[in-house]
Image (cartoon, rainbow over all chains, first blue to last red; front, side):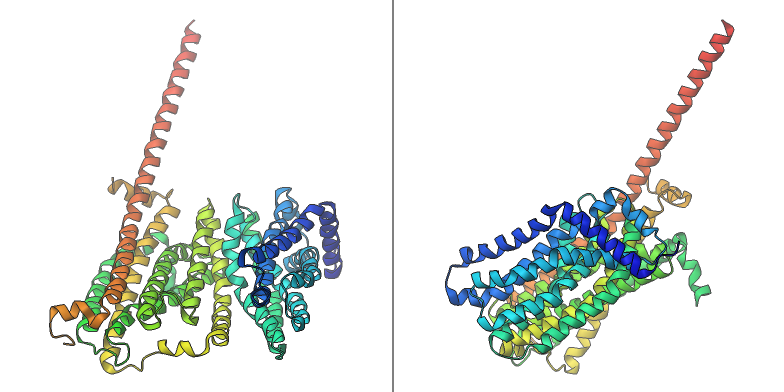
Amino acid sequence: MQLSYRRAFSTILKRDLVIAFRHRDDILNPILFFIIVVSLFPLGVGPAANTLMKIAPGVIWVAALLSTLLSLERLFKHDYNDGSLEQLLLMPCPTFVLVLAKITAHWLITGLPLIIIAPFLGVLLNLHQDSYVALMLSLLLGTPVLSLLGAIGVALTVGLKKGGVLLSLLVLPLYIPVLIFATGAIDAASMNLPYNGHLAIIAALFFGSLTLAPFAVGSALKVSTN
Amino acid sequence: MWKWLHPYANPEVSYHFTGKLIPWFAIISAILLTVGLGMGLLYSPADYQQGNSVRIFYLHVPAAMLSMGLYLGMAIAGLTALVWQMKLAESSIAALAPVGATFTAIALLTGAAWGKPMWGAWWVWDARLTSELILLFLYFGVMALQNAFEDKALAGKAASILALVGVINLPIIHYSVEWWNTLHQGATVSKFEKPSMSIDMLRPFLLSLFGFAFLAGTLVCMRFRAEIIERNSMRPWVKALAKEHN
Amino acid sequence: MAFDSINEFFNMGGYGFYVWLSYGFTALLLVLLTINSKGKDKRIFKQINKRIKREEKLKQVAKRNASVKQNAQSDQKVV
């Protein structure tokens, strides 16, 4: 039977979303982690409004990176453990369809909630009032990049027993450009400067990783499932 | 070219070939380093602004250049391993990573020791130092991934993919760090500008650069040989060699 | 010569500590890496030799067991 790419994509996407909604903890825990990490910073550096305003973009974005990292493992781990990943790789359609569907599902259940919850954390950190739109836009463009690049790391480490710490070592350096330009955009917005340029670069990173990452993930999965 | 290269794709041939290279590389690197660093320490002129601290330059810049060059070499080996399924290229990644990481660490430490008298601080978030730090993380990632796999063949493939991903990201990281640096620091960077090199500085610099390059070559060959015998430990020729070492 | 005396050479115009620190670090790291790289193939050869010895021992034990079994079988036949 020949499966059209769109059919395959939507089938896998639906399957992953259904599985995710059955394990609600997996969705909730990274978000709770995100909230807790952000609320730790005022306790650590003191509640002075000016200091918080200065560090807010960086704190929110670093917390977003970490909570994405925390949720990355479930991208392939369950499927690897019960053997369905190998079956999926044997499907009669290119691997990048499968990979893209899984990454999209991952973004929908971890990236999207981050974007929705981020403005509230901005209020906690006394984020500059002109920065909220920039924060949302940078998260909207940036979190898919995190999912895409992170998927490479997960695909490489999914076969290992102790992949967790190694995953952060592999993935975090790759996140640096997104972090730099996203916080740059938010900072620029707080100074009433144009931030289209920053967003354009994050968009470029997004499209670059969208085209290249699925191939890396596919070949890494083939190595991991051997 | 492929016909000429083909025999070297045989592990036994390249094991003996690199064995023959090692003493030559070691001698050349010893001569170049003695002359180059000796000239740099004794004869090259002191900088009119930085004084004699400029002599760290003969360590810092070659180490930094080699750290990037070795990473590029690793990525090329990764591409060869993935595209042409060459097992030896995987061994060379495993051999290159620790050497590259060491040169990165040298570049960082000498950079810090140069920064202290120049900037008044051991560590400044200068664009070049920051990229070098991230490069060190990337090296550690490749090495950690390599060690995490029990199966050497899988480890080689995984490390090849990671090296390629890293090399695509490296220029992006480098330019974003540079941009970030100019945004946040502005004026302080200019002190570390490349000194316009006079011939008195260029000569020892080039000598020590090639000296370090040959040293890196020697070390990579040594590790490469060890990787080859580890991956081929069931082959009769390796067993025969092992008996000689008993 | 950029220096007039040995003392001046070690002092490096006040920068001696930093210059010698970086040369020292470099030398230390490279020496450690060289020792490690040089010893690596010997360590691996040692492992291989150990494995060969173990395999030979196992083979001998297997042979002995086989011969014992054969003897036992022939004994049974005699009975």
